[in-house]
Length: 387
Image (tube, rainbow, N blue to C red; front, side):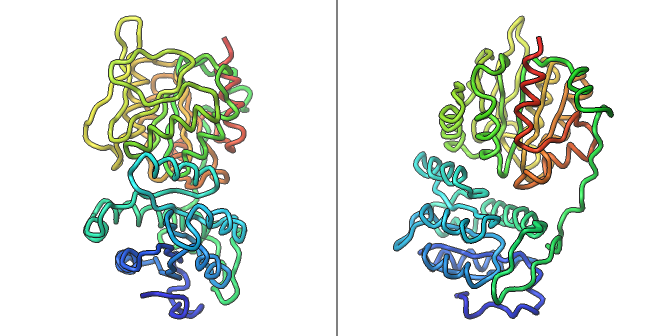
């Protein structure tokens, strides 16, 4: 079992890897996750400990990029350890391990509000952890995305005894995106000439819940008359709790969309976990439809089918916003929105947990604006309230 005494020397080849700390009271779980990750190039287990108190000690002594943090542990649990870890290193990327239950979903979303970067559903049995291809792919994908974002952070500290921080040295790190604003021109000119939307659509993934809480906490209920539809990459159960948290922080009536439901202003509709949510015109009404068509961009729900359907149903009166997230989901849908005359904006790299989805639309030149998260709500409100 890996522990602090077996860490590689700072000048070893592993020092350029994404350095992970496992925090779980089950030695069996730590061992299984260690075997999964040690088989991956560019990922190194820097520490493996059994509770939050030990994690704090390990972080003080070692250079860590990503922490996999279990919630329920003796001595110090994950929710107690989370703010203490971030106090030591505010830029640390922490992935919470959570059960697929209502309680687990609620705790995970509270952890995101407290500063965790992401969560991963914990398999119910160790055999699923050992042999589950979906769990492995999700875990490795999140570690790589968050680790690369961490390694590009110029404020990343160097721990005593750890390797020197090297900006941008993470293996397979994505090249810098080139932002091409569409159409060209000053921001005020673009907001002036864009069509006032009849609907606001938001797509997000890693870091998305935190961004949604911030965005809708400013753009509170009553500030815009349009309905808001959201596709956030999340499993079932989690999207139910996401709606409750959004309602609490924003005052919006936010909940999972229902098949056949007529869309009304003043409400937030969230794509339920494991369902694509699309919109179709039905006479004078616009109606939600849920389906289990194949995943797109490895996701269900996915942003692309939502945006394509909205472009078809609303034409040019669409405002789409792509927030932080891994991958490129939202790019093809964003292109459909722009082709229909609608408007797309994206969160900028500096304020994104992972600049995959917003970076994809920004670099493709379909965005009318690429904005820091605090500026997104005012931009949307300015355009949406203009009638």
